[in-house]
Structures are given as structure tokens and as C-alpha cells.
Image 1 (cartoon, rainbow, N blue to C red):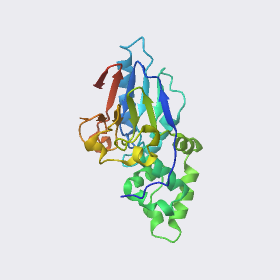
Image 2 (tube, one colour):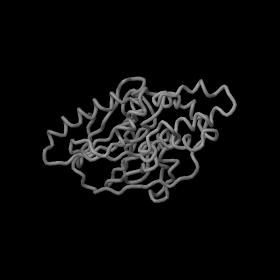
Image 3 (cartoon, rainbow, N blue to C red):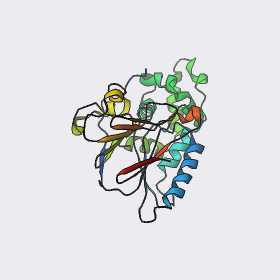
Length: 249
């Protein structure tokens, strides 16, 4: 278990309740090719909904474990994709912890056991070359900051923790059951599993989330989990949401 981030209040977005066409994408974890392929499928699917401007909501965990975290961040940090699709990227626990590592490697070294070694390699850094020498973590942090484009850091810092559209709530991990949304903690939205997975939100919302990996999406009590462990299964999942309907893509 990696140490949690210090208390942090990230932005929470309120979207129109009647959004006509939303696609939620589960945990990417450095799977750049799978992300591009899924976005291509979304563009094809959205072409069948000509009267609706599509929105993609990414549910967080863009880095770690998979092979191309830096490429994923570069793609998501790009403001214009030229396809007419709006995009919102939410913050996952891996993204938040990676940002903390860039700021304080020695205080967040357990991130390296959390799949962070793959992220470092995506920036051309081999962690083993640093860890066996005095001051190695400090030097690793310096070299990482030197290699990371400033837009990657800015992107990680800017990520909101939640987006609500009517009775649908998009977060990375879930929420504390029964706690009013305005009182929810960032930590729970990025890290929680139980009791949320068993009890659901215990609020009049359906939570669309990732974080708890499996081979298939899970339709639980008041929640839909679409983390299908892409870095291990090769399957990155999207959920299409229209007014009154949801469907896996």
C-alpha cells in the first residue's frame, strides 16, 4: 500500500444534466496504443449520433504499469485533437501520486513499487541506476523533472477529481457511501474501495468509476466500474451514456 497524498482539494465539475452523448473511458495505465484505438472506435460510434456533440470523460490513472505513460500524458495534454470531441480528464490515485513523486521523490519513494518504474522508463530513465547510490532518489527526481515537458506537470496539477451530470457522477475510485457530495474527500474519490464497492453510493446518483481492476466491467449497486486492467488484458473499456441509457462500447 503506497502512502496517500496529503490532503488536497481538487476541482469538482458540474456539467449539464442532459448531456446527449458521453463516453467514459476506464484506467489507461500507460496503454497508449489501446487508447488511440478506443478513441477511433468512439469516433465511429459518435458518427451514428449526428445531432449530439460527444464528450469523453477519462476516469484517471493515465500512468504506471503500462509501457507508454509519457505518450498517454502527451496525448491527453494536447488541447486540440481535431475531431470535434470535447474531453475531460479526471484525476486517479496513480496520477496524483506520480505528481507528488515529481515534487518529493524521497517522501514518495513507494510509488516506485506501485508501477512507477514503468512510467520512469517511458521518460527514458532506468530507476535501478539511481537507487543503489547515495542521493539517488534526489538525482532521479531532478532528471525526471528535466525530462518531463512542463505541460505534463501542468496537466497533472489541473486534473479535477469529479464531474457530475445530473444523477450521474464520474470519479476515479468511488465515494464514501451516504456522505453528501459536497462533503466528499478527494482521497476517497481517488482511493476508496470498501465499503463503496459493496454498499454503492447510498445517494441518488449512479457512480461511473474505475480503480478496482477486473477482467470485465461491473454493474453494481448504484455504480458501474469500467477498469478492465488494460495493461494486463489489453482491453480498455468505454461506456456510452445517453439520456436514460448506458451501453458498453
